[in-house]
Length: 159
Figure 1 (spheres, one colour):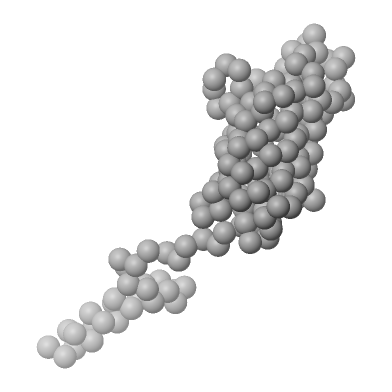
Figure 2 (cartoon, helix red, strand yellow):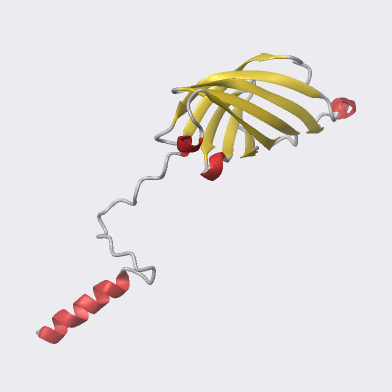
């Protein structure tokens, strides 16, 4: 009987994995750290990134957002890199500004905001954004354009 109990204990320990994780199986993983800790309230953060969509459009951007509590506002400076529309090929390199505002959820490390003003509606459209804040305030997100599909995606690094 002792040997059986010893074998069961050894098997249970082995099933916990080689990582040395000794949490009980029912214990949830530790909560993720809020990325807002590195973005103080009432300050502006800046990013540079790249946006693409399923049709083949590519833009680069510089983004500045000011955080005030749970509110974010700021602007994108967009630059067209690749056009999916042959009639727009002469616009590659052109720039436009999109002003955005919305909210941040520091506990979930997410932001949602939308464009409300653009400087050149022949180059860009005001989009809606769903953004995840990663380590070092990196950004990963999806955008919804005029057609209603969430088919744009982007990544950005903090500057």
